[in-house]
Image (cartoon, rainbow over the protein chains, first blue to last red):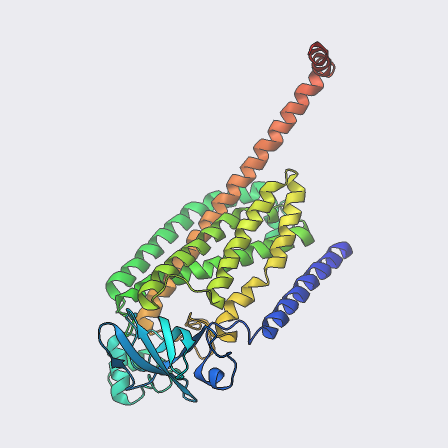
Length: 163
Length: 269
């Protein structure tokens, strides 16, 4: 029995130590394993000039300008900073004002981000359209303001009922 | 080791493979039935009762397959890790059977999660695949499953293979918290957790309930398939043991003639 306990402590302890080591490595890589940089990161000089990177944030309300063909211009913001983006190509269905996007490209001399890829990012909230409408009417809707649809509002059956 | 020992735990009682075979034979039909009913009901809810999502429309229905698969991808690995611990620490006779049976199942659900996620990503995000922290860590989990199966099959001595595979499984368990928290620690294209998170689920009940029914159905299906696979493995081991015993008995019956004829034929060539 003692041998069994000793084995248990050895192996269990080993797994825990490994987990902690893994977590420490991952926290150390926190700033490195990013899928995209925010406009604030760029303003803070985290991206080298002319370097190709992904820029992520929300499409600024009222910033979408359609050009000829599939040319489109819009601004990406994280509330702190805003960067202008130009893109030619097909946009994902979810692309709209206030929506999260991740674009890939580089900043040109004029300070405009020239994207060759635009991906849409959505949040973790799921609800029927009627509920979204009811929330908007109740003034509980925060979508577009911070990109998170009523994030701190618990979504319950009550929200689905009468506005 | 008698059957009537009073203070045995459930795992101790199941340590007897014969008792496990008897119990699983009674349980399996019920499990298959429960899985079929739950999944049928879940699909009915998903397709005829659940509303479309306010931003994603009908595309959100992929979630009813994707999320249960992803949960089982991680749950399957946790099962392997616990079984491996049971093998290395308690030398439980069924622990390795369980670990071995769960690996292909977990790999299948991981593949399902990756494929359905990819099909979901194209219409919503605009891409089948990105190398963000969530997607990449789940791909690593898939490779870990393949690694466990490859390692086991590459070693002929089965007890050694079981031990080494168990060690790899326990080392690999670090991937589970990384997958879970990848969407919180790093900015990713994948959205953060919707169901298991602080502050409760961020899914409206009309979509959440079908999802949970599907998850329950998938879990029961996993348990049923795992039990079936364990039975197969126990029977394979019995057949192997019987074959070995038979060979031994035959060589005992004719101890001299076999090597003698071999040496004669060796000289002849």
